[in-house]
Image (cartoon, rainbow, N blue to C red):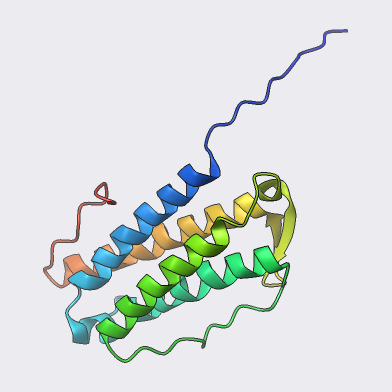
Length: 163
């Protein structure tokens, strides 16, 4: 019988994960800024939602989800919680939610990252997997934004310039 000893080594700290996520949020904010006002709310390709709707989804997930995790509240996701009328409305709310994310993220201990949590009463995964989903979802929707910008003849920000 062979026994293998394993040592736990941390790949990334919570602070590094938050910095990584906020880098993506910074880049997504620049994508929002790159859109002309009208196209932000109206332009779509192949039946996909306009980027203002995608940004609204991202705004409605990050902060509220982290608050739910911290407060152990499994309240359902509210897709209609934010109805912006202008790009300025979106950017203002984006910046407010950045602070909400920082506030709640910093209340989640390293140990809680491993806990299973039923996010929005629908997604039962370890906390860290839920957070990685927030980042993945943002990257996915930002890619749609890049497609829209290119179709509009607008050069999107370089994807590697996150700060």
